[in-house]
Image (cartoon, rainbow, N blue to C red; front, side, top):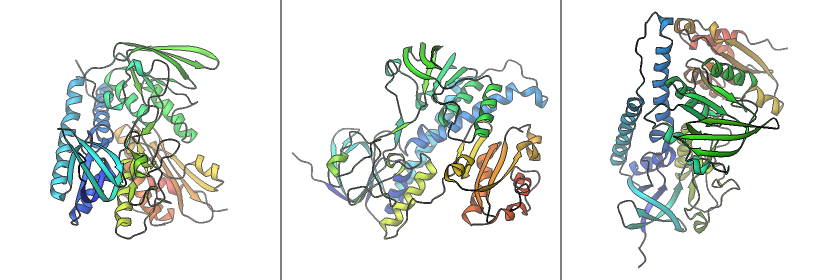
Length: 465
């Protein structure tokens, strides 16, 4: 017997950042809205990704202060790290965030369905409910917000080794003896440093010549120095050919490097070598929704898919994999549904990697400017020139800015240092407003703060030729 479809103004598949806000916003305006979620209420960010990882990273930062305690005139005796307590602190935060989401669903009037959804026709989704039974939903508009997951490469023995992804790594209740990490990108670097500070021996295996290889050379050199100082082993230009053993017990990696085979052994294995979209097995072909050769949902600059009335947002649509970008995706779809014309093209994409020191950037890097043939004036100062860093004994890193050669507009800004993620916001606002760098150079910032470093930085801009 075929289940008759229930009619909704908006049906959202996946409760991640963009999807949930679309549902909440439209439901508050009186539209009948429903969100289908398979497992994580609110998506990956509050449950298993951004916020949990920063919670664990902060615990690791506290641990690092214990190891450095003599610098601050504090004696440490019998210091112990209890990973089960670290984990429980994170879980308590997640529980609070989940409850916040449930409250938001209730307050907005949007319905939340726990179950697995898949398209069975145009704008029609069948939901296999988690508590049994099924429902069929048809939306005047449908939003695909299914996110992405850690990619597991087809390396012989890798799947059989049951490697950790960021999900399991953030839920460890014991300190691993020797953690091997495949991937020197943002996730791998953040977790490598955190686990090292908890007491694990850590080795990063990266296929490229350097960590965070797409960033400027001075950024990656500084990251290599930081990790070396903390006792993290880094193996670059290594291509893994085979994996033996099981993560959590004993694992052995075979890799090719400079024409020779190397073998790395550890107790745990973490895979952090990229993401893959969650677009398989949800019936996209039955809804007329096409995907790219990498599996992302095809969208235009308005985030419309190839099927009328169907939209895609966030990671699964190939948007930059940041929660703040997914939130902006929600604003784009929200406005377009009400007759506007908002697009993804030309928007700013700020980001921050929460290593210690933090690495944050907005606008063009030097690498990107050179690749595009864009001329710039460069200003750069070491973080030690920012006097606040001396009060904290957090002097590693630098600030740099790219300034247009014809005008005084800021083309890009990079911060590698304490509170970098906070510092870039001020520069970003100036860029959004089209302000010349001289406004920041001549501003009066509170002393002593990190933001005050923008004054010596922009005072170092070379004059126009």
